Length: 198
Image (tube, rainbow, N blue to C red; front, side, top):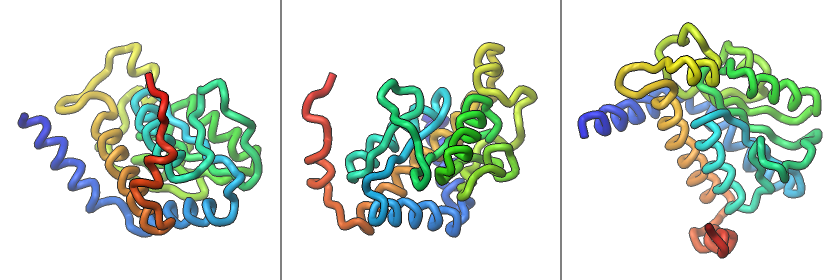
């Protein structure tokens, strides 16, 4: 129970550290995209647990009426100019995500990075960066898959848990704000929600 309180306290502290201007830029970009590029695509990218957080966000974007996709699925179409990619990586150095972000840049799509490090390779490539606190310093081995294989973890919450938890709550807040701006009700979202589920 104490760890739950500690994690919740971290998320609350993270909420005070996220720059309002960065969050506003992200919401504005998504609102503008919805109103002016409805036929376009939003591609959400993340590795490991960041990828799971991304999946949850992509699902809500779909419920809001976006054409949203998750990197790694077989049904992801080509990303084009004027599409949006949202890359989630605490370190901003996860090789898979940095490589995918490079492809996004080549396609001339807009890139939003959610990371703890604005000066990371991912952050430097992005059009919009939202800094979500996570690790207080880089692990000696920053690559997610390498850390996983080596079994590297940290006290309280291993690996990038605090970043992922804070990002999940932050993105749920983005969804709530988009619902207000796009005048969507819970019933609107329910109508799009899957009616055949496993």
